[in-house]
Image (cartoon, rainbow, N blue to C red; front, side, top):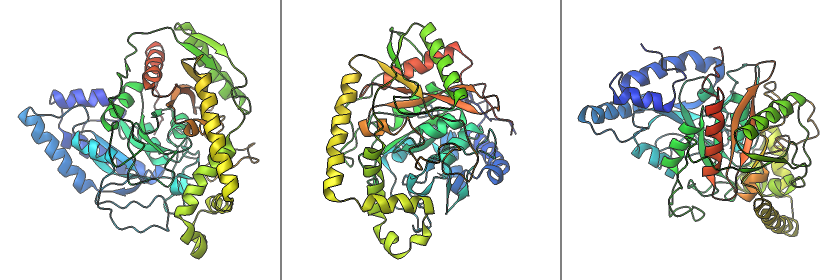
Length: 464
């Protein structure tokens, strides 16, 4: 059987178009590799290979008729367990949720099915997406393919692990405070949350003003392709963005000279020296590609209290009955932050709501002077599994250690993590690219230019 590991989405699609292999052959190879990797990495919380085989057979029939739908047709992928997939459980990584199959697809899943994607199953997540690492009481520990003793990050842990391990070319995650970008950085992937509402969310998230759905892939081109399929207006999500998605220009065409702000700390973070050096070197490379880069040491004060008040209050309200009747079912670290969040009074909560709007306006004004903002994605490389925060960050919360990601869930603007190097210990490091509202094109253009000028992520393969 052919080895399809680490092939790009485009390469796999070309092979199907040329009939070098069939969608069924591709799927069976992926299932065989899953059987090898899953006991070591723990990437899935649910699989349905019988349904995947039916989808692959349908793709093969379309290919034989010359009616292949598009680049995703016949390509295996997975969906994070925070997202609804018809006829599969949606347990949110929690023992407190029934394992009964749900009866509808989320809009992103509907669009993937319509595009012919072959859905393997549901990927693991931290409980209700509440931690930046990859474990939950329901599924245990998900591990990083680069070093199984390290976390892949979270909460889209399973999605990142399977893409980094070369099992699938892309996977679908969610991001309410960094949950796509954190594991993208720690696993050496390109991951993006597009503009808030660019990809519709339904059923309503527990964090409806912060939640994004998006792809993790090994390069910007593949991520752009997937995003173009799952993006677009849906009347079930009142926040969804109407109008077509702009040309994502992921091939790096039309390279306008960008005005870029580089902030190593945003003004309040602390960063591992090796991560800071690797990201600074990447910024120097970007400047050499024809961008005007200015270092901005203080962009903002830490908005973590604004973010936590919104995120954990939403999850805590959804879980109020569990908090009252069966708190022992929850991850102890998650239980602690939820209790704090739902204890805030109305005056305190709305003070933070209005402070959030003021913060968004401040960031809007900041981006009047710049096309992009660059930061480290997270301040550290992958750290040991079983820890909720990295060593040296014990004074931080289960998300606030990820200094650079959650501010841009508050603003809703597009943000991505681009792989830019490896530590001496062989662990990936990511650079965060933040764009003004609705300008995903600038992110993909810069990411593609960087990956075209360097080895990019395509040659980054863990030894599994």
